[in-house]
Structures are given as C-alpha cells and as structure tokens.
Amino acid sequence: MNPRMKHIQALAAGLSLAAMLYPLAAQAGDTTAASQLAQWQTQAGAPASVERGKMFFSSKHGNDLSCTSCHGTPPTAQGKHASTGKLIEPLAPAINPTRFTDTAKVNKWFTRNCKDVLSRECSASEKADVLAYLTGLKP
Ligand code: HEC
Image 1: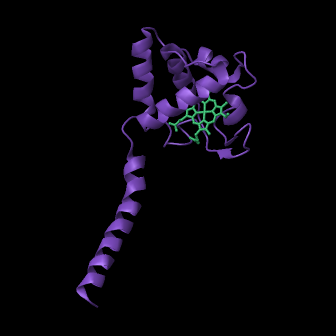
Image 2 (image 1 turned 30 degrees about the vertical axis):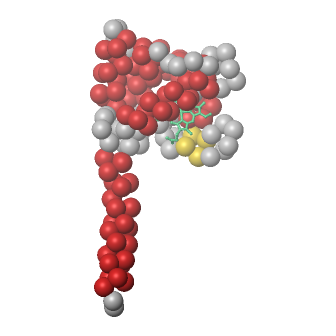
Image 3 (image 1 turned 180 degrees about the horizontal axis):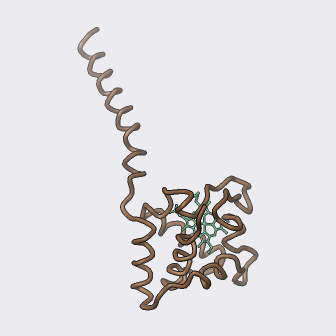
C-alpha cells in the first residue's frame, strides 16, 4: 500500500472512531433530573408540587394539545407524536434514564413544546412542577 493510501485509511479509522464515540459523549450528559428539578425550584423561589405538575401535564392550556397528547398518560409508557405519529420514548426518568441528562436538549424541548401547548414559554415554577411529577413516577 502506498503511503498516501495508508494515510487515508488511518484518517477513515479515526473518523469512524470519532463517530462511534460521539453518541457516547452526547449521552453521558451534563445534568440529572434531580438537579433540573432543584434548579427550576430555586428559580421559582417556591417548592414544586407533584399534584400541580400532574394537572399541568395532562391539561390543555387554550390550544388543542396537552403534554399527554404526545407523551401519553401516564408518561411512563411510550408516547406517540400527535401529528407525525412517531413513537416517543417514555418521559419519566425512572423508566428512561437518559431523560433530563442533557441541558441543551431539556431546554430546547421545553421551549418548543411549551410554545405548542401554551403559546408561550413555561415558567420556572411550571417546569419545577413537571419535574416533580415526572421524577415521582415509578415503573
Ligand atoms: C406535539 C408533540 C409534543 C407535545 C404536545 C409535547 N411534547 Fe415534549 N417532546 C416531544 C418530542 C418529539 C420530543 C423529543 C423526542 C424525544 O426526546 O423523545 C419531546 C421531548 C421533551 C422533553 C425533553 C426531555 C429529555 O431530556 O429528553 C421535555 C422536557 C418535554 N418534551 C416536555 C414536554 C412538556 C412539559 C410538554 C407539555 C407542555 C410537552 N413536552 C408536550 C413532543 C411533544
């Protein structure tokens, strides 16, 4: 094999290794459901409520959708996207430990989904309540 080929082969091996490691790194996460709950609760300045979270999650807020429209009732099971029909892995961290482990993902989807359901961002206290409800769910 000529040196140029060897170089390309080494490069390709390096790239596929990086591709293999990337999902691991992305999955390792930078937060936990418990610290997300603590963070929103601190920001809200009041204790979160499981009951309020449950109500909030399963109610409509002026639009056609509730959180349960896509995440199911209860969100310990697989959900189904209300418009695309795509399956959604369970949202409760006791069943799906990858949930609430990636700050960027949590923020992106809270923003997007709250806009769909409430036509606004969720408040810190609403997010704390949702986290209290979801982290309290057992398999
Ligand atoms: C129109 C469908 C839809 C609705 C309604 C919806 N979601 Fe989602 N949600 C998704 C999809 C799709 C994802 C991203 C795919 C995935 O993570 O499985 C997601 C992901 C999330 C995540 C990311 C969790 C993580 O760390 O993995 C959070 C938090 C979330 N949703 C909260 C909510 C809340 C709270 C509501 C109600 C205000 C809501 N969702 C309503 C479709 C929806």
